[in-house]
Image (cartoon, rainbow, N blue to C red; front, side, top):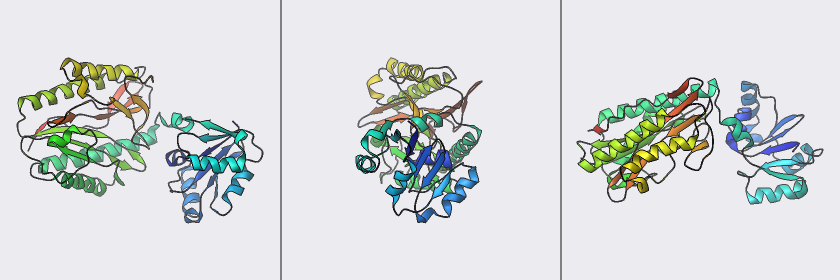
Length: 341
């Protein structure tokens, strides 16, 4: 390739600082041009200047295809992001540039985003601290008797008041049998004594995200719930202890899964052990049995084993860790003590 047309908003933000909802970034050997529209005629140049991006802005949406054709007139192989572009967008660009000039790409910018620098980590640390504090306040106020939805709204409001732009994703509060659904949405169910409760919460700070899950028992758990809390917590601690530069992500998954399988619940651990986090809540590297990545300094990953039993409930425990030259550092520091009011 001798040019690349980028559509993914997170990739455009990473390369330029631009946060608008409409934009394409044309990159070639002579520079880069951000194509947007008049809504961002003031915002886009200011954001690019703020980060020192070596890029010009074209805010005129009129004749966009003519502008694309002109920008790439001297380029013979133009990359498109196959994981982001729609079929209809591709068809339009084929009509504009010619099919023989277009090449599918995957992961070019995402590979750059995997390893975070100090400025990115600073934002993620702040996001993790905000979410940790919000969770501590909500748990201290008591969960029993409240609806899942009310607890979720409370967490989101506290994070915003503390300086977050909002939640990093839709906050999960799942109680009783709802906790058997790994991505349950908070509903109108009242949290009751004896329930298992999963709270999955993260904050968004300057585009970067945190991710954390804690599981609780409202009052003393019954023997089965107590065993579930113990097994999943031990699996998470064992797997997180393995995180370090040079470690293969599949080994982390295997470590967590072994503890749960030994307890006889292997088939109830129905997802991967973790994933990368950054501008997106799910990004590379994946932490699963089939993943092949080797951790390097700057990688930020979650470790989040879980066990889910239909009709009974579930438990998931998750931390966000950053890999450094001297080991791993946990960004999400909320206590794992499971018994609350």
